[in-house]
Length: 140
Image 1 (tube, one colour):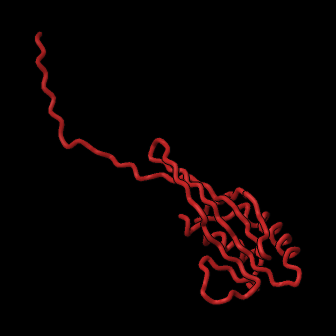
Image 2 (cartoon, helix red, strand yellow):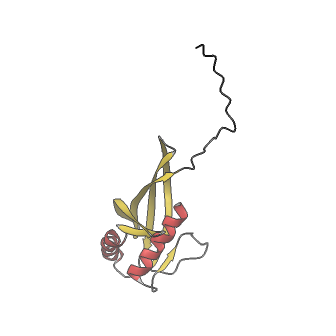
Image 3 (tube, helix red, strand yellow):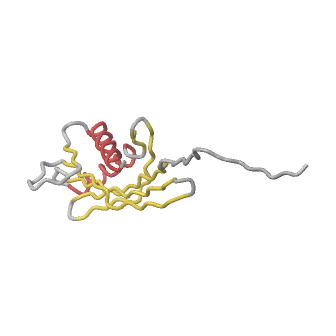
């Protein structure tokens, strides 16, 4: 499911920014071409609920490498655009809402943090009896 969310974030970024921006979920050894987005799931927390339900709390980080001579201004503009384009994403025909934690600019690179939390349902095992024998000792 994490990979599906990552792909949905990639699709939302491509739809918002177009093909002029590179969007990747894995970092390469080569120097990235600016402007560029890197998407990664920083942490996942799974909590079990009754009825074989599981709550997944996932923190994603989208890093943006700017191209202009004024990287801080470009990062702030990009951060505002990310707020709107990543609020809702489509994951396998379901809209998922992102909860923005924060964004920060470090060394001219934007780090945008967003949570995509969801419930999943585990398979319910059903154990059926094969035969039942019933004996009564009733006195009339």
